[in-house]
Every structure is written in structure tokens, then in C-alpha cells.
Length: 164
Image (cartoon, rainbow, N blue to C red; front, side, top):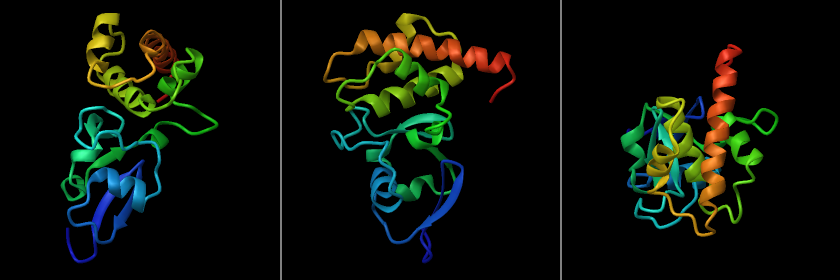
């Protein structure tokens, strides 16, 4: 960090956050940038509610010092898609009606997006293993797996059509 602050690229937009020495990435995203996708859950990086993508890799924002991600690409739930053009993973969760209380939703979606970017057609066992570190309090695990399977189909269709 320099005197001017921390320079970040969040959801494809460059920004500078003033102050924040010692602030976590989650604090900066929520408090300074007003992004509410990543949630504060446990504060220990164990529940997954705060998951974001850092250079395309799923990471727990509650335990990452903001200054450590300066200059890297950060994607939050808000940066995956838009209200008028949902990302295929977001659409998969809508199609499968995989949300109940919403506690885990951010982390599940972001983990699924990272998984599907690496592995376009994961098995059910692979999906379950990938999401096993995310806590779901409602028990919508079956619907979440269906959502990820649906998202994989949507992503393949999008790629076949020449989409992003």
C-alpha cells in the first residue's frame, strides 16, 4: 500500500481504496466498495460465505489482507453477470431453485464458477468434493448439485454459440 491507497481491479473496474491498512479484502469489498455479494460468515475462512475469485481462483476474502491482492483481478458475485444477463452459474442456481436462506449462496456460486472454468463437465462426485468446504445451513445440497450440473450445460451451450 502506498500513501494514495490500495489499487484494486474489482469486477473489471479499477479503483483505489484509501486507508485500509490491515483491512481484509472482505471489509474493503463490503464497506468501501459497497459490494454485498460476499458475506461475512465465520471470519475464519471456513464457511465459504465470503468467497470471491482472485485471478479466477476461488479465495476466502475474510482472511486475505486487501493489500495482498493489489493489482490482481478480483471478481465478486456482482461481477459474474448482471441482473439482465445472468452468468450461466447464476442462471443454473435460479433454474434449479437452489437458494433458500442465502447464507451459502455467494460461496456456492463462486466455487461453482471457479470449478466450471477449470473443468467444464465435472462429475457429481467432483462437484460435491469441490463444494464440501462451503457450509449450507438449509440443507439444499441436492438442489445445489443440480444447479452446478445445469450451469455446466448452460456454459457448454454458451461456448458452442461463441459466447464468453
